[in-house]
Image 1: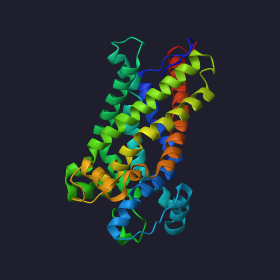
Image 2: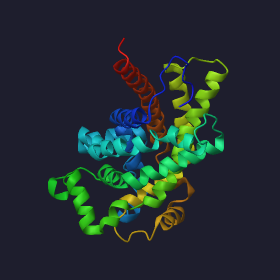
Image 3: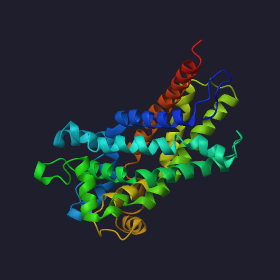
Image 4: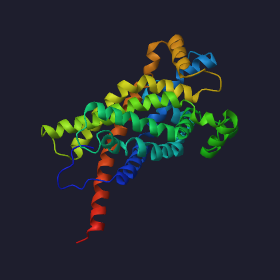
Length: 309
């Protein structure tokens, strides 16, 4: 990222790769209940149509969390956490950890990266991450959407069982279900998130509003989270609905979007917006602040190891 001070050690690609995955896992542990609430709100209209009911089960972010705790127990808020951590360790490592390397690739090793170069780097690492980590995302969404019931009523009994069951019942392609809308979503998310964070941080440092420290990282991360939610929410809802759908329910992501528009109207594309913002905003803050500290700590440890005296 931008804004390294002269005395600071520039972190290596390996440090960024490992640091991004670790920071993303920490952010997921903190914000996972908000993500689960977002998924439940996003699929609620679909569930009502399938079941023929117009009753609204979940109302608002904290209402959804309260309802889930009351009816399913506190553990329901962390359904799919194992797959979520697997996803972040593989997914964030690529899309965030390789972002700076991809910028240098497009600028042929120079440090001057314009907005187009940053967007290209964000799109590239976002697409690479999805192609690599899509099965973990499918399993995570399925668990978050699954209402905790008796053992016999559960869709999957565990993370490994989910991978095996999806591959057996839907084929290996089932593990990459929703890959195209997810690539679209994450290209948008990665560009909005990383480029916005990069630009806000750069402007803060350029005009000496703050130094390259925690308040600067906090401000840039909050701005990135809000911009990302506004831009990516429609694609995120379609991605969630499509990945959670049963076989044959939708012919494709476009059909899923058109069905939503026809049956629920345009407001359906912003279902779960508040939990999305609370989750993305808080996730960005925890992730970027942690990521910056991990990069610095590991770089200094590496420098000390190489030159202890």
